[in-house]
Structures are given as C-alpha cells and as structure tokens.
Length: 191
Image (cartoon, rainbow, N blue to C red):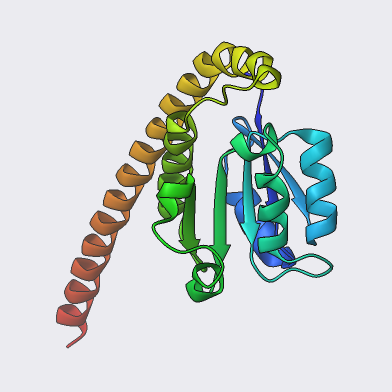
C-alpha cells in the first residue's frame, strides 16, 4: 500500500522531525513546510491525505492557512489536526468544540499514542463531514468514495499500531518492575 501523505506545517524543525519519527514510514509520507505560505502552496500542489497545522507561523499564521482551506471545496475536506503549545491561540479564533468544525486539536508536546488517537479522530471526523452537493463536488465525492477502502485499510493499520504501542507500554512497566526487583536484591546483598 502506498504511504499516505501527511503535511506538517510547523516552523519548529524539532517538531517536524519528532512527527516524522512517530509515524511509521511504511504507512505515512511526511511532507514539511516551515511557514504558512509554503504550507498552503504544498497543500494545493500535493493534496495531502492529512494536514497538521501549528498556529504561530512565519509569513502566514495557522489561522490564515485554515481560512484559505475553508474557502476551497476540495481542500477543506482534508482532515485537519491543529497543534499548539497554547490552546487559547486557536480557541480565540475558532471556538470549541473543534469537532463541530471537523477539526482535532492536540497540545504540544504530545506522545505517540496521543498523536495516533488524534489521527484516528481526524479520519473519523473527515468521514462524517457532510458531502458537498454542488456540481463541482460530485467528481470529488466519487474520488473520495473510491479511496474510502484505502482509508479503512489505513484505519485498521493505525489501530494495529495503537495496540502495539499499548503492548510496548506494558512491557516497559514490566521491565521497570523487574529492574526495581533487581535493585532491591542488589541492595540486600550489599547491605
């Protein structure tokens, strides 16, 4: 299966690299943009499967990118994940609940399991978005239904990845317990 393109629009190279590392390369191709203008250009050119958008960006802030997306019938259907270290930046422009606008918000910094849950939620919201009934949107709707099988397959893969993360977390807990037992044993022998 081809990798799904996720566009990360964030001026922090650290955040872009972190997201690239968190997403399995077999399933996701991570595209990057360091500012809002470049991000909007890449959205129009690449038509990513999902967009992860920071609020504070050079040249064009995240809200301006969001507004541009909302003006385009095709682009506004791309699942959107909003990111920020301060939620009030987004809520000052887009009131909650975000789900009513088919958006997902995650607060920085975040862990892999939070990211995976947010991606799943964004996918589900994208599928719930009512179809555009305009004539121009008919072909877009046909394309979307043709790719729904691919989206379902990706959702299954994300769920499998989520299960693997939970197994790994349990293994870490078990190893921590074993390590503590070993430390206690060594302290007994020494003391």
